[in-house]
Image (cartoon, rainbow, N blue to C red):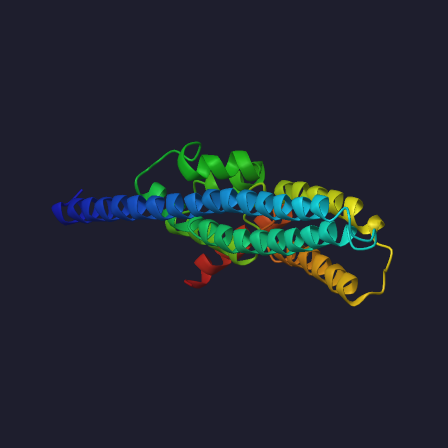
Length: 237
């Protein structure tokens, strides 16, 4: 190895190390934002239900048709709040998954074994199909990173547990609806219809977040990308 080549390798390694550190700091920050907002949502939801349940109890002396509206209002506000939270979480999570290509590139330059680091995490959490890219010895670190970037752009870099969180959120929201909606007697009142509309908006926001989110890649997705990577190599792209 010539002195110039050795110096270039050192510079690339140092640059990869610095980029890896800054990228890790960014991922940690965004993950912390997600965790913090979960706490905010819990506190806000508890505050909403505490207020309206107290209002419901205090209104027991009023005509019966007025009382259930407090429960419906709590459900409506919770639905919108949960919908906005899930949509916001997907937005932040998309930013986190956009960093995977940088991680794979830096770890490849630093010769981190594919079973460790981000590559190992992706294989364990998303599926063994990713081994076809991350453990392919004929691919350079840049090509592996490009493959991961292509998966990200096609929204096939993994759900990161968001589907399970959506299911839990929908279960909680459906439970709220099951409690509040059957209590309504004036189904066509302006306030009741507005509440139902707000609940629907909450469901739509959750659905939209899931619809535009990252999904797990299939073996066919991986093979298509491998074929494209090898094709680009042949054309010098």
